[in-house]
Image (cartoon, rainbow over all chains, first blue to last red; front, side, top):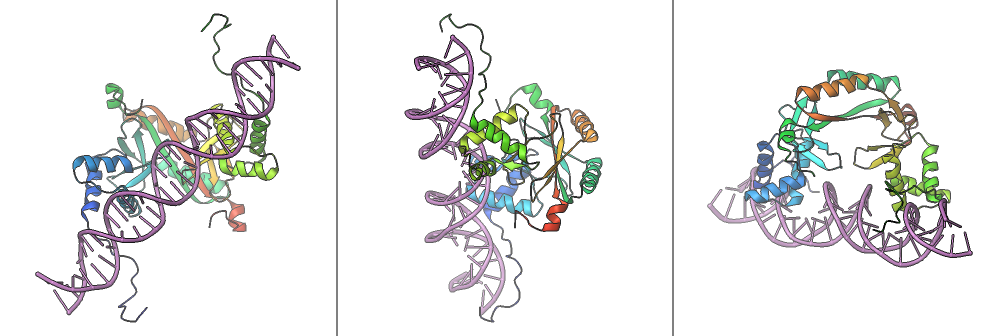
Length: 146
Length: 146
DNA sequence: CTTGAGTTGACAACCGTTCTCAACTTCCTG
DNA sequence: CAGGAAGTTGAGAACGGTTGTCAACTCAAG
């Protein structure tokens, strides 16, 4: 509250830490959607453990910054993945292994907007995700779920 | 395990109870998506209270039977509503009041199927929900969320 | 009315996620 | 390179929605 404060500090400056690097790194490895808990476990197994709370915090920060994509699994768990492009897109996700393909849906975008407008709704957002079983999982039958 | 058992009893016969009727009735009233907890509260306020666990069980049974539609709110809560048609359809839901409009997406259905096939995925399912703010809520500005 | 199988409800247990806060780093400054 | 303010961490508690438990209860068939 004293006037030694230089200028208006809009937001906290981010800081590089081992933990943040570890989480980012773990995400860089796969093209599969992973839950916070899976990543936490993966890091622990790998040798550079990170607190679960930190994993959650970091993922949230990355998601807010648009660096990772988040989606909800069919049973409500949040899944994260680092996508190639930052622009809006959807996913075709394997419900067995989490592997995902980025897909566009120009048609869907338009459709969503027009349907919304037609019914007098504003600020339209849409959730569009495709779930399936990828060829590898079908061949292997080596499911994560049973 | 004795052979007095008449025939193969495939499933348990359902039974009509005050509770089941109450839940079904509460759902019949609105065209808005409601959470289990909201319904539980609504029933309590209305005078014919039903245990929370029972509300959950009943909603699940109704959903399994295809009598009500379920969807996940943006923060992961399950929302239920009795829809006019039993066929597959999507929703345009007001994120303020839960009011919903049933919509078709023939284009989307095809698109989903073809995209899935193109990437070698099988058993394709799709999640398509539209969120917006309905005209009434926009006018009233009487949001449930703040 | 009897009776037994489905049903209920208060409460504990679960599970993913967020909060708390003291101890610890990072990084700016002198 | 030391000093220190401020961001960051992590173990564990708390949270909120949902499901499991199990003795008491109540439909509905006989």
